[in-house]
Length: 147
Image (tube, rainbow, N blue to C red; front, side):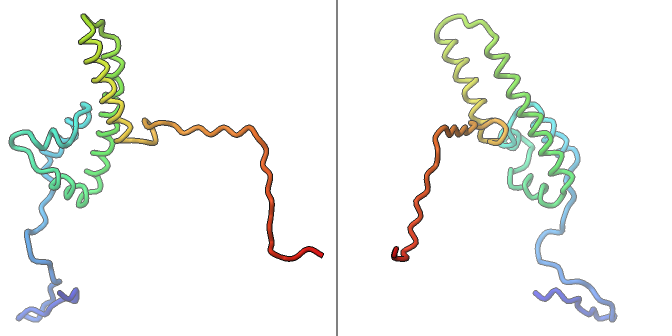
């Protein structure tokens, strides 16, 4: 479809639009709910599965359409990651009753730490450390015969 404005019968110009639904603004109530949910350390997928919520793809379209919403959602995810990290400490501080509970707490903590490493590998992922203690020797071969 050409992007040039089309002439209407009355002589005025209108810009060509793609067929489909007209753009709708991000529903503020749902946006606020999603942000509050993520700030609690929960996932967007969990929120989208709740009754009356929207598909994840819809939230991603909202993010593409509304830069401010996308930034607020990113900040909410960061806050949620901090909550998950705090949960790890809280879980570790609970005195287990038996060995089964010890393993369960360990699984809860490891799962949260793995999720954090996936969500934000720069901040929560494994750190690569390089130690170099030896010297370097370079042997250059030029292919030019020696005389």
